[in-house]
Amino acid sequence: MTNHTNADWMKKMSATIGPLKLNQIVLPGTHDSGSYSIADTADYSPDAPNFVKKIEQISTWLANLIKPIVAGWARSQCDDFKQQLESGVRYLDLRTSLHTSSNVMRVVHAMYGCKIDVVLTSIKEFLALYPNEIIILDFNHFYNMTTSSHQTLCKKIIATFGNLMINQTQTPGITLNELWKGTGRVIVLYDNAISVKDNPQLWSENSIQSPWPSTANLTVLKSKLGKELPNERKDQFFVLQGILTPDATTIIKGLIPFSKNPSTLKALAQQVDPAFMKWIKNDWSQDNLNIIICDWVQFSDLVKVVLSLNLSTSKE
Image 1 (cartoon, rainbow, N blue to C red):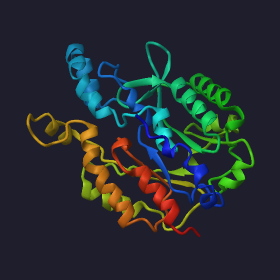
Image 2: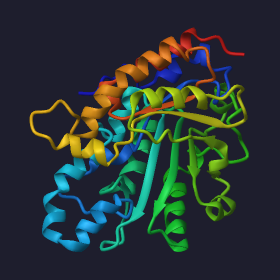
Image 3: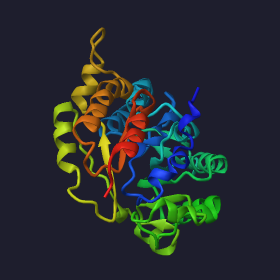
């Protein structure tokens, strides 16, 4: 059951964070936010690993047989969108594809998850209950999408949120107090230049830096993240990705019976998240932190750590 204590943390901390710019506030986020919805029997999506696509070409039977294994490495979260937001998460990482056979837009991470409608409806319902919270939706990977598909999705986003959308004329340098004077509560980053040009409600991906550490090694991860932290705050959002990316060796080792090797992304995250939280608190608490994401956020102290940083870190 989700703890609702942090459901309206931005409102509760308004005296402290209200005068701050959005890119000065530390925001907890989730990596591959919609992947909680991936079932063991889900279809493979266009972003599936190449080895999976090759297996599917060779043998449908074998491809179906390994689906539970692939799903275990595809699910980056376990809470649904409502639960993530109620726990305090304010940044959602969204990857979208048009399902080839059903022609329905879904979230993806190697396999198809829930419909995009679920994302949008969940957020709108949350904001109806907690109208002072600010949410960032980052549509940063698209697969199997045509110009028409983008037009359809953009219309759906705009129709869902209406005046809750923060227009692209604003920047990450706007303060919470300024936003609270108006109706805008949702920032939608959208990685398609034509769509952003045609729809002033959408923000360009130029508004955010989100370097991918791309490593399966914990020591390398810390080194990369430490180097990526910006020396100064630019008029952009910055995402610190506390995630390990499993490579073929990691996955193969996970198949060894009775070993302590992680065999799912959940098991890998349980090794990474405690270390990542220590780095944030002990090494980077005085740095230019903004958006921080991890896998399986429910099993981490990310929200607790982030809220503590917002209370204790002096902002300039």
